Structure formats: structure tokens, C-alpha cells
Image 1 (tube, rainbow, N blue to C red):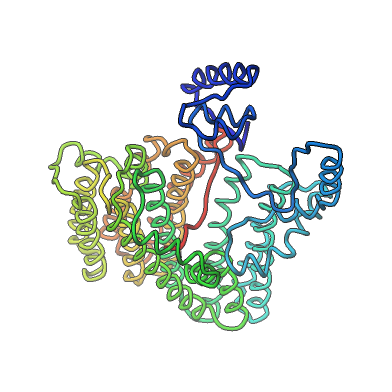
Image 2 (image 1 turned 180 degrees about the vertical axis):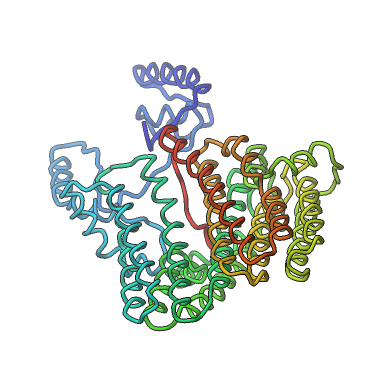
Length: 531
């Protein structure tokens, strides 16, 4: 019974026994279930008896505008029928099509009319996948308008980006309204959101370059920061969503704040979710310059990252949770360790301690980023720093990631890899290096997002052959540092980064498409919750 009852294969014999005893009890009019189960006496319906026998907690959702009654006489029956007839089914379907928990901008500026657009699409036989594709195409056209570098192009880009977001909300509402759900649709929705935003960043950078302003470093920085924010959300949630005794004073405070209406919206807005973020980008694009857009993005996303990370650190340090083996495996998969790190993890030293993994990861990442920022471009010291980082990466994942702060390991690895590519490209002073680096980070980020969606869908990480083929995070970082040392000419580094980006994109994208088309796995995504 989808959405009502899920029974794992190993539990089905117990369910059959419970159905047998429940059916017998119903026939005899006797209570069923454990002797101390008050629900067995209070609820004599078959579902109630079955729940008591299985020891399950029955949930009673609010019906809202719907009506449910068990009339005992004709008058009560007539009253119930009248109440049912008074329900506006169409209005209920439209309200149900809108997500119950969403950002302020989406809830009050988009959903009030996008639901009617969803109904319009449903009546004309359009599918959610078609609307999702239309949203992507609209965003790509917006990026093209931004790339013109003219004021008219920027205004058109802002308007089209907002309309793309309207369509982005509409596809999910159409799926809920018309009950058209699919694995492909969920994957497209999850993937296209990132593709649209990062393509728009590239369009802004191209437009600024036409006006003589090079903002590729800012565009890549915004993408790195946004991707690292997401992996913090994903990593923390995967580490804690099935933990035992998963409570803390910080979580209790958060729940208490949620009981005050205005704090709910404030906390949803300051994390700069996709609705608020795209609205800010669209308005600033139309009214200002690409440089100001990226400055605002970097400041806003940095504040949001500090806020959410601080909340997650406090929760992790104050809760007494016992994390499961599944959570530890999810963090290991999110780490994206390649052959070098796996070799060190298997053959290298294991340092005991609850905080060993995040501390060693931070030490390795800090040394790598510091070298990228301080050493001359092409320096052999960068290769030494990358090797040291690979060794630290292997030591960090040598044991199970079950510590309170081990969820920090994947975000630290993402920041080390992305920031190293950014720093090397920015300091190379080679034409085209930053756009090539933007493409490389885009390809790698796609692989990392794909890993998240697979884990959340319950299918595990991508196959090991894929991770080994594209080198893992430490392997790619070492390759980029070697390329920087070897190709110091006018265009060699740019060509090498471009080739690496194309290779990673082809392998990751082909395997990803093959998996999502054939697997039937659900794709689940979000941008995290407030701290």
C-alpha cells in the first residue's frame, strides 16, 4: 500500500501471522495485541487491531478540507454526505500540489499562481518532464541573454531566469496534481537545477568579459561556495537522519523557534534557498552589473554557509547520537576517495581518536590550499602538497566515519579540490584558464551531486570503476597540480584543463544517464534545512 504501509520481505511472515490473529479476533469480537495495549481495546477496527498486534504506532494525519466519517444512523449519514459534497475537490488538489514546506519567496510569490499554470499544463496533456525541460531551456536562453553584455540582455536575462524558476516550481506541482511521478523526472529536476544556475553564472561571466570586466574567478568562486554548501547539508543529513538517540539542546531550541511564526520564515530566508537566491540574482542582473551579482552571491552564500554550519556543529557536539553503519558508509561514499586514498587507507597508519578523521582532513586540505595560494604557479612544491593531501585523505577515511564531526570530511574534501583548481587557474595568468577550470569544476560537481542523489535514493554510490577512472578527489587534485607544473606556457594549461574536464564529464554523464534510465531508483534532493 504505497504511502500507507511498507513491509520489508523479512517482516512479511510476521504480518501474515498478525493478519491471521487479527481476523480471528474480529470474528470473535475479542481484543487483540499485547495485554497492555490500550489501543487494542479502544480501536476495534481491523487496521487498529493489526497495528496493535504488530506494535506499530498509528499516525492520524490532519484531513484539512477533506471529510471522513463513520455514520451510525441515517441522519449522521446525510450530514456526512452533505459535508463531502461541499468539499471543492479541485481546490484540494491544487492546494495539495504545492509543497507544504518551502521558502518565503516561493510560497508567497510563485506558488499562488504557478499551481494554476500546473493545472493548465495538466489539462493540455503536458508532462512534468516536458515542463522541466522547458525550464532548463528558458534558463539557458537567459544565460545567453546575459552573455550579450548589454543592458537589454541583462534585463531579459533576469526576467527569463524568474520565469524559469516559475516553471521549475510548476513541474513538481504538475507531478503532484496529475499524479505523474517518475524516476527520470526526479533525476531531471534534481540535475537541471544545478545545470541552470551554473550555466547562468557562465553567461554572466561571458557578458562581463564583453564589457571588459573579467569576473570568471568570482563566477567559479560562487559555484564552489554553493556546491560546498550543498555537500555540507547532504553530508550532515546522511550522517544523522537514522542515528539513534538523535537529539540535542540545539535541536530542541530549533524546534522551539519553529513554533514562532516569523522565525520560521526568517530562518528559511537567511539560508538563501533557491527561490530567494534566484530572485536576488535576477533582480541584480537586471539593475546592476555581473560583478555586483557575484559579490552579493558570495556574501549571501558565505553568511548562509556560516549560519548553517555553525548550527550543525552545535548539534553534533551537544547530541549523544549513535550513528549507524549505513550512515558511515554513506559518508565514505560521499568522500569520493580514489585509488591513492584507498591505498593509504588500506596500508597506511590508523590514528585512533574520535576527531581524527576531520582533523586530518582539515590539515591536509589546509596545507594544499595554502600552497596553491602562496607557491608560484608551476612550483614543484604544489605536487608535494598534493601528495601530502592524498596521504591525509587516506588516513582520514581509514576507519569508519562514525564520529560526531566525521560528516565534515566530505565537505572538506570538496573545498580542497575545488579551491585548489580555482586558485591555480586564477594565479596562472593564462588566457582561458579560469573558464576551463569552471568547466572542470562543473563536471566534477555533477559527479558529486549524482553520488548524493544515488545515496538518497537508496541505491548506494556510483560503481567503483567510475570513481577509479576519474581518479577520486585526491587523484584529480594531484593531476591538476602536475598539469600546472608541466604546462606553464601560453595555452598548455588551458588545453590540459579543458581535456580533463571533457574526459570527466563524458565518463560521469554517460554512466549517470545509463543508471537513472535503467535503475528505477527514486531521486531525492533538497537544499538542506535551517540549522
